[in-house]
Image (cartoon, rainbow, N blue to C red; front, side, top):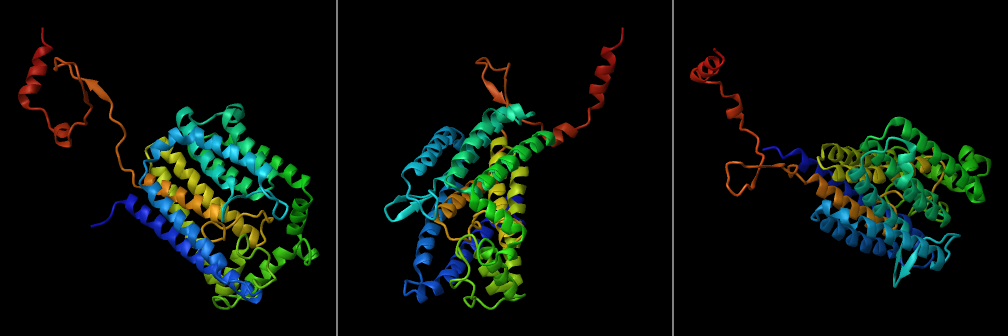
Length: 409
C-alpha cells in the first residue's frame, strides 16, 4: 500500500535534513582536525561543539514537528520584539570578533541573535500576509512589512553581517512570491533592496574589496582574492572522485574559514565532483519537498511558513555555493546543516520541525455551520457534503410526473 504524498514529503525532508547534518559533522571534523593536531590542540573540539548543537537542534525539530504551527500566530509579536531587542543588545554589549559584533556569550555557549531574527521575521511575516493578503503596491508592501524587514536588515548590516541580511531578504522574497504579490511590485522591491545592498557594500572598504576581487580574484591572489583562489584550487584539485576523506591539503593553513563559509571547498577537494554534486542534489530534493508542501497546504499561514522556510534554507545554500564556486561575491553565508555554527544549525533544525508539522497536517478546512430549522433549540449543525450516491441518484418517474403536473393550469 502506497503512503500518502504528505508522508513521502515528510520522509524526504527528514532524510535529507538528517543526512546533511550527519555529513556536516564528518566534514567539520575533517576540516578542523588536521590543523588542530598540528597546533597541538584537541582535534575533536569543533566536532564536540557541533555535535552538542546538533543534538539540541534535533530535539527542537522533534518538538516543533509535534507543535501545531497555527499556534505560532500568537507568538509572532513577542518573537519579533525579542529578536529586535537582542539585535540591538548585541551591538552594545557583544565583544568584537574579527571586526564584527555578532555573538552573545552565555556560559560556554555562544548565540547569534541574527539567526533568531530570521525565525521571528518568518513567523511574523507569514501571520501578517495570511491576515491581510498580498500587498498590491509598493506603498502597501512598505507598511508595515517593508519597514520591519528593513529594520532587521539595517541592524544586521551594522554588525556587520551582509550575508545574513541577504538570506533574510531571500526568505521574505520567497514568501511574497507564494503570497501572490504582483510581479511589478516584486521588481520594484527587488530594485530597492539591490540599491540598498550596493550602498552597504560601497560604505565598507572590505566589502568593496570583496566585490572587486570577485571580478578578478587572480589580480591579487595573496590578499583580497586569496580566499576565492584557495577555494578554487581546492575544488579543482579534487577532480571527479576527490583525494579521499581527510586527505585534503587546502584546509591546513591555506583556506580561511574552512569549517564555516568555505566547507564546500573542502568537500570538493576530498570528495571531488561527485561529493559536490551530491550536496547540490540534496538541497534540490529539499527544495522540491518544501515547495510541494507549501503549494499543497490549504492553510494560508502554513503555506507561507513552508515557503519561507524552504526559501531560507535553499536560498542560503545557493548563495554559499555560488560564492565558493566563484560565481558570486563572498558574503559570509554558511552552508545550511553542513557548515560549523551552532546558532544557525539550531534555528534551521527548529524551522524544519515546523515544516514537518505543516507537511503532516491533513486536517480539513473548518466547516461552515448552518442553523438547523427543524431543531427547536436552533443549534447549528455542520454543513456536510452530500454523498456521491445521493448526488448521482436519478429522479424517480413519480417525482418527474409530480413536477410536470404542478405547472399545469
